[in-house]
Length: 446
Image 1: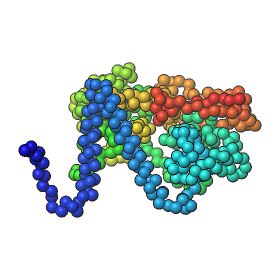
Image 2 (image 1 turned 60 degrees about the vertical axis):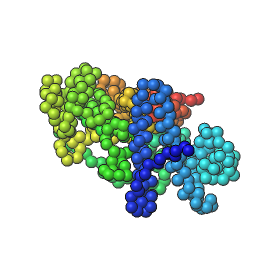
Image 3 (image 1 turned 180 degrees about the vertical axis):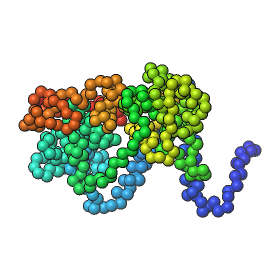
Image 4 (image 1 turned 180 degrees about the horizontal axis):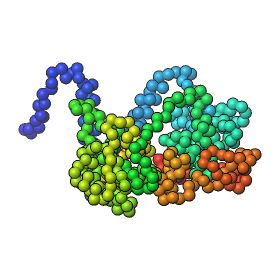
């Protein structure tokens, strides 16, 4: 007679039946840890097919989680009777029709996914070109004296680059040749009933003034989680801050120009030796050492070997004040910018060091050479660092046909290119195909 395999006898704790839901949450959290470790090792495998399969598996899992998130949101809306659901605005209806065209949906598919009736979608499509004061499908009303298409360009640009604020949009368009102030851009994007912000800007005095490029540098570290965070459902309620759960990223920027001079990726919190190697690579790339290096008082920066290396390089090391707001504001603001505009915009943070280094390198090139900096009124860090003529001072387009040529415009001031009354087309390219790194240009159309 064939023997039956013995099953392991795992004792269950007392009262386990009252903790089934808690156990399910713990099991999901533990599964997330296991899958993170497994996928991270697979994505660093020597076999390219194994790496590709691991990346595809991770993307499929991310898509499944996003679909579950949408399902939960849709389930709440579906419980509301169709007659009592909030209506889409005219501009949202146009966005739905654009999405339908991009996805190739039928009327039934569009209605099912957007929780409307097929008749509503058919009505929007039939009245797409309707004129009048209150059309069913429309773009926003024109703002001030600018033509209607200017506001539409701004809103479409905001939809393509949602992370950009009004000042950034104004500076990017100025570099492309269309000069708009931050206030008109804000009015074009703001709903009519949106209250104005009353927050006051806090200016912090700085003890060191950068007088030229490579005079003062800032350096610091930050962690980049490979998932959305470090939380677990069991003690100590956090994952260890090291790979594969996160990366450590070292950054160095020039204070005068805000140009990124160095960036590196580490699997765990870097030691003083690793920081010295990073500093040596950054100095070699820059071609000269800075006069001052401002850091926090982390163990890497206060190590005797690191301080000795700075002295031999002729670098005066300075530390930010502990607990003083704004003492390290420049590098802290840049870290927040990197996370907002780069790492959190990726579909998934790579498990491979070379892949993350490549993504950060693309962002640094875009940040230095394309992105206008708020401190410099539309100029880029590279234009300040290398002393180049700013693109935002080139002759501008003027879409208002009766605007006097000698009248002023939104800062920075620029002459009018060709004749006023230009009709413009927005062209948005992307650095290396990355949707979060837009390169904006304007084309004059007949």
